Image 1 (spheres, rainbow, N blue to C red):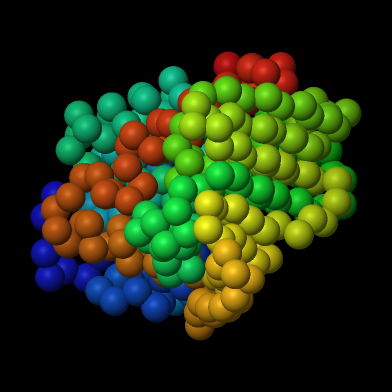
Image 2 (cartoon, rainbow, N blue to C red):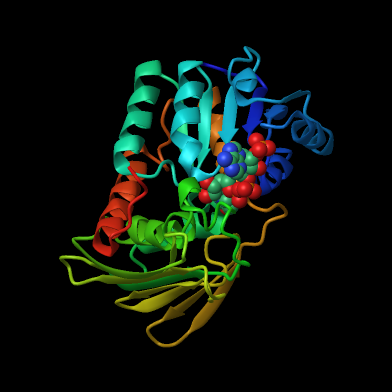
Length: 329
Ligand SMILES: NC(=O)c1ccc[n+]([C@@H]2O[C@H](COP(=O)([O-])OP(=O)(O)OC[C@H]3O[C@@H](n4cnc5c(N)ncnc54)[C@H](OP(=O)(O)O)[C@@H]3O)[C@@H](O)[C@H]2O)c1
């Protein structure tokens, strides 16, 4: 699908909390336009269309998926529906930017990737942190070896939402729980900084709905590096990432998964802070990358690769196995 020099017409499938932030930031992406939005409720779609200046509003998802004018679809449903709608979109030749986690398990991720390959259509997991300037800077800094090898990583993500058994965060039927929703960020940090772990230890607590309320993980690596990771919906935590290297420490400040500042401390204790504040929420970076891939006729991101999405979900599957969590798969 070569869309060179064309303004990419985006559709948003499921106008919830995150879709609003995404639509706001899409305005900052060159050669992209929000063309249509689809909700299960036409009124909601109409309201969203008015708020963000889309051209079309649909009262069901299939009308968006089959609209021949749409080039790319951003899927922002609860996790449980990512697989089905992604596959529907790909089969209708729509490029898909799908929210994290791509699915509930790695078998489903494999199926989604295989469908994208068969259809020769772009698919990418919307793990926005990977595309943010501060995160890319840190990855490059570590890769260039300024502080030597990474010895350990500590990363957490915790907040304290009001309990509501039917909301997607707590409802297991909607993929609820801390691990898949926010634990994915510390796990993503471990994979992008240290790679796939050789050993995994984990423990968790549960809500009465069966969704996990918190999850503590320790990833071990053959080179003796270690990652201590946690997610919780029971308290607000620092939500930082601290990377201890042979010759210094890199501290991604709160909240590490968003545009933020980074403190570099060398072996002599010299500190340097770099600020990476941006004018948007930060979702325009993943969208701009995706838009660019479409212009170049690419069907896979060189950053958020299929392999990385697969490894991310395989790692989460292993954590689920250790803590005994399953989603009726
Ligand atoms: N990248 C990030 O920073 C970030 C942040 C938050 C969430 N997320 C991800 O985005 C996805 C959506 O999260 P959200 O916080 O935006 O959720 P949300 O506010 O609950 O919105 C989800 C939307 O999905 C649609 N939907 C379809 N079937 C549904 C069902 N059975 N129950 C509930 N909603 C249903 C609803 O839209 P209609 O009814 O109008 O169709 C709803 O507005 C999740 O996968 C999450 O992991 C990403």
